[in-house]
Amino acid sequence: MTDAEFRFVDTETTAANLPYGALIDALEAGFSQGCVLPVRHHHYIEKTGEPNATLLLMPAWSKPDDASQFLGVKLVTIVPGNTARGLSGLTSTYMLYSAETGQQLALMDGNVITSRRTVATSALAARFLARKDARTLLVIGAGRVASLIPEAYLAVRPIEKVLVWDISTESADRLVRSLNERNIASELATDLEHAVDASDIISAATLATSPIIKGTWIRKGTHVDLIGGFTPKMREADDAALALARAFVDTKEALHEAGDLVQPIESGLVAEGHVLGTLSDLASGRVNGRITSDEITYFKAVGSGLADLVAARMVYEQVCVKWQ
Image (cartoon, rainbow, N blue to C red; front, side, top):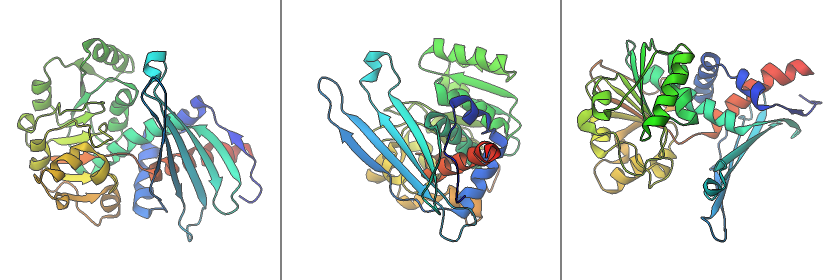
């Protein structure tokens, strides 16, 4: 890696080289091994006539004694005013470097890195937390990330039926048709309470600011996976859902960034100790995942620079090294 040529990896190539089975395995190894993971940087950009924007920087790099030395930075722009422009509010780019020499190695589509590592991280958590016989998956949400959830979960559990619910029935129906076209047996869920009660795994990827999943709806043995809700003011599940469950997070930052945890902790409903561990704890075996078949498990993720680095390294080693 001392004389590496810089490469640009396009969207299609990035996605094609992040198959879920291999990515989930790589993430398990990555979370078990760990890396150097500084606190992410938030920079607020003042705007006139529209909401302020945000620049988010997420760095991560290999430990000094790791055999392979990589350094990566994801740059994310969040521009709420883009809704009125008919544009996506979030754009991200991933730059991978050699941690040994500091040379640029590759520029990749950060949106693809983010979306695929996000659902793969949830599927990895389910490997430890969902029942091995889980067959019905409820997807709450119908956006880009939600559309990828079923394929990721199929890599770790014998999913036979996917239910889809969204605040927009039209959007949910469109996702159901798309999944069925990909030979993933799917149905539209019109009654959310009934769908929650009928599911073995519930995975939510929404921008909800108030709980849409009620703890009283959740039956024993269910695994609850919360992908959305990445700010302290956002919620996808109510207090009862957390209180009932054995809870885990992707990283400790979730305790301070995710409304699904921040709000019930601040209210005194639960202490931080109610969260039993991180994905690193699960992957390394320091903490047990699911213990009994009838317990409710709960996983809350806010995203990790470690997962980004694992995914980018995977693309680089499969694509860029072959080009050299």
